[in-house]
Image (cartoon, rainbow, N blue to C red):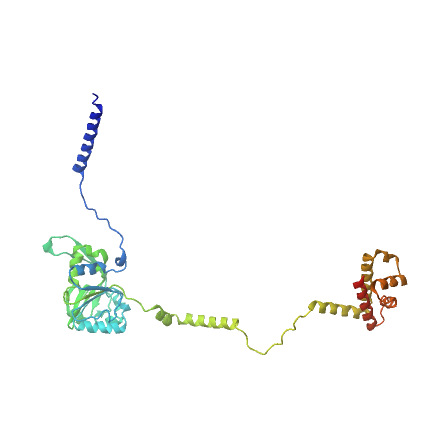
Length: 373
């Protein structure tokens, strides 16, 4: 009995078992996170991660692009995070926000460049900023010492200054009244305003760092849990039609004038009635008649008469070659036989005309001869 095939099968099974055992012995399960580009709302909403975090903590939060009172009613106890340029806040919204802050609201925003922000409607209504310039600075924000966590985040920007009354009401700050602040929270009547050189610590992926999370929690602390958090990451501008009417009226006026000019040039002109052109004008015959009258006036019609005579004789000799042998009265008689005209009339037609009636009669006779030849 040949046992060689059995040994081969056993060898193959042993190799397979060895490979499977080695795979499970060396295989290590590991979760790997690969960063991916932001999609959907996360691409344009800088506070998307903050909104999701607040929702998971069962804290009501809403991301918006407007300050419309219908969508942002702003009740006492609410928090408003304004992430767009404060210069885009109009006078009506600035007055409403300032009154809401004094009634118990919490406003969190960045002044940007203080010398420009101080003249915006919002900061004029709040009366907090001092326009004196300050220097650029950075500050490291650490976790609480009790956590033993070395994670830090940095807050950098051009410092801002507060008016003396606002500085006296500051209850939390990074910086001081002499050198300026990177962050300051000041009391305004029953509410509070938190000023931050920039809102990067609350934006996008910055909240991955525990230090930024803890700092963000402190920023939102004054009214946390008392009302809704409104995250305004951008402010919509006016509608296109309003902007066009407000800023584009010179172009609209020019286009209107061009359109009116084109319509005037393309439309029917109004004016006195012109006589209708003569129907069926025979311009060629008029030209021939004018040329004949000119030649007749030049030599009394003799050249035209000779040309007509030669034309009739040339046509006759092509049609009746025997006529080439005739001349004078014999020729006239031959023509009379062919045309049923009087020989005397034909003879007179070949004579040089003495006046216009004679010329006209000769040409008529020659034309009849030409048609019968």
